[in-house]
Length: 590
Image (cartoon, rainbow, N blue to C red; front, side, top):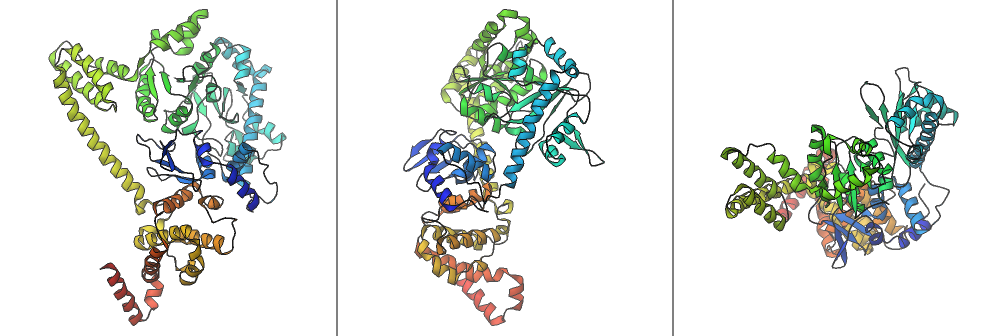
């Protein structure tokens, strides 16, 4: 059942979309609207628009859009009811207790409860006699009990049914345990512990919920680490270990990005509490955007081995793409942060901080890596290095930054600066053309009806579907047309199911006065998915200039061409009527 209209109207009136979005996105005014870099995809020029006039948003780059509820759903990975609850808490409203279909919300809540109970179970097991292997391991890693408790570290017992039996005694079903991914289903259909004989690292989200776990084996068995798969409350692509602590302990608006759980914990133990890790997976654009909400600079502190250095190289453009300043630090002696801090004893924290301050930026790091791959003692090696360096620098957006490094290259290799700049301009133009082509391809793919998952029927009926969308937009801006349109173009005349559903819902809201004011985009958030809300926002915003006079054209297209899309009707139609429709259609296209 839907939430009470009075509650939703009160919530909408209190939730100013500009205030809420600006806590996640740096917005700047452009006319009567606000613009910023989209938090849902990487972009260099802002295409994310917030429309305070109707409390909606739309990104012309990736197509994300909708109302304030949709924004919270997407950015916080929540379902509809949870997003409403979060907004209600923010503005001080009490959620209605009756008449809410929140089955997905209840499952998510049960999964969070299971995760919390599992974390308690693992922690208790660590402190029990059977947890001695885990405690011994943490002792070898010089972790005091204070840090073990701070991070809620634990031990998964040897038994494959210890946690399952414990959770069952607490009233949780096997289906819920499997949904939380703390259990897996055996061939016989039973639930069995996913983690066993491993030290456990709870992963906590930005709101303080335990959302996942990482488990490390203490033997040479593979895999060394097992991590929670995607669940109703967790997505690996957005998870960041210890971000819940680091966001409140930033130093100079800076995040330290380490490689593993123990590196992060050792840094926190040393008082460097702005350290995080990307959970054993390659850094994603989504993780970078989350980091960019809280910090301006990232210092990459990955292991010095080949795998760690390759991971750093991959992470640099992703972090830069999120608008972050990037530096890369090297830990002496090929040690990881944990080994370095422990080896330095009481001086560990101070020496590590000095390494942070001495770390070079990402350009210097990448140039040094390039340089190490060429023999500069001969002309051929110097030329190859210079060409590779020019290609790297051509990818920098800032012309001043490019000029600084060109000057360094000129002095370093004793090559005329103007010659380097000339080659640089060729590379810059080439990259600009390639970027433009890629942008065009991306836009074509995004706009292509062939890849339309929201309204897949549009691929077959592009002209009619476009007319349907414009008629919906026209009705949005001209509510007084509802009665006449309902008579002339009832919903069943619409060809595509998605547009028909929007049109029918919009007509109902206007004619039956289902909303207190004129219908807004936000009135559809309970019945549409986030992707569908994005399409609705696109329809309304891109057709904002449509007037009541334009409606007639769209009506005619739907009534004439729409009738020709139904094969059964065409087969059964009177030949004279069919010919008349075709003649009318030809006249319209002339």
